[in-house]
Length: 360
Ligand code: ADP
Ligand code: MG
Image (cartoon, rainbow, N blue to C red; front, side, top):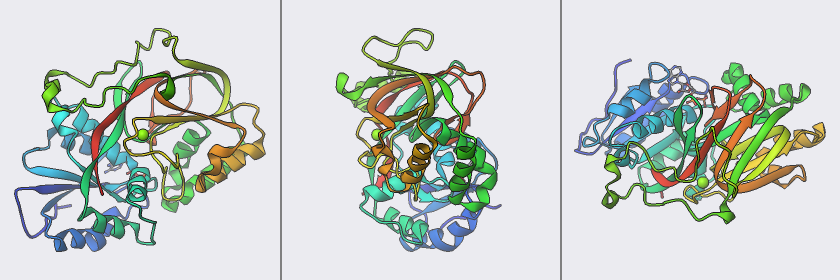
C-alpha cells in the first residue's frame, strides 16, 4: 500500500505506523476513515507507514530521522508499541530516541497502553475509543512512561507493559487463533484454559519496592552524558547465572499464574493494577499458587474486568523494582507485552520515566 500523507507539512512531522493485522485487521481502514481526518483537521503534518511484517517497524524506529519526526503515532495493539520501543532502545542514540513521544490509537485486540493512557487522562471508554483517542492526541503533551529492562540467557529487550507466565500468558498466546473475535478472544481462551487447568513450577524472586531506594530516575538527562553508554544502567541486577541478592524475596513452588504488570489496564475490558501510574517507577507482581481451587481461578480471571482480581485471598502481590522468574519445566509460554518469547529464566528491572507517551 502506498504511504498516505496529510495535506500540510511542517518541520515537525508525526510518523504514523499501522499494524494491518492487529486485532480484527481493520486498523488501516479505521485510520483512513476515522483517525486521519482528525489529524488533518488539526493541521498536523503526518506520514503513514503500514507494517509489512513482524519486525518492520522495529527497523523503522531504529533508523527514524529524529530531526524530522517529532512523534510516533502507533495504530495497533501492544505488539507494535513493543516494536517501536525496542527499535528506539537499540539505537546508538537511544538516550535521545526514547524521548520521542508515542501517540497511541487502539487498533489491536490487546490495547493495554492506549487504554491506560486514556484512563490516566481521566477519560472513559466510549464506543468509538479510536476516534476519541485521536481527538485527545491533537491536544496532548508528552508525559513520562516507565519502561522495563529485560534479559534472558539469549537476549535483551525492553517492555512497557507486562511479563506473563502461567494461565494469563497461556490464554494470551493460545487465543491468538481467535483474533477475529477482538477482545472476546481472551474470554474464549480463558474458558478453554480453565477446563484444562495447568500448574507451572519454578521460582519467582523480587526486590520489593519498600526494601529499596528508587532506581536512577535521570537516565535520560542529557547533562549526564549517557549518550556514550550502550544501554541504560541496570544497577539492581546481578548476572542471571548468579543467585539473586539477599535483599530479594524468593518464592518457590507450583503456580497457576505469575504476572507482572506496569499499567493500570491490561486492555479496554481488563483492569491491570488499578492504582498504577504511567511513571510510578514500579512494576507490580501478582501471583496465584498451585492449590487454589478452580472456582477461585475462575473468579480471578473474571474479576480482571472489574479490577477485583487482586482482592482474592489466593492472589499475592508485591510492588517491585526488579524481579526474576525461573520456570523449572523445559517448555511453556512466557510473554513480554503480550508477545511470546523463548521459555526460560528471565529477569528485569524498572527504568523509571525513561519513555514518553502523549497524554495530558
Ligand atoms: P493484537 O493486539 O491484535 O495482538 P498487535 O498490534 O499487538 O495486535 O500485533 C500483533 C503482532 O503482529 C505483533 O507481534 C506485531 O509485532 C506483529 N506484526 C506487526 N506487523 C505485522 C504485519 N504486517 N503482519 C503480521 N504481523 C505483524
Ligand atoms: Mg509502573
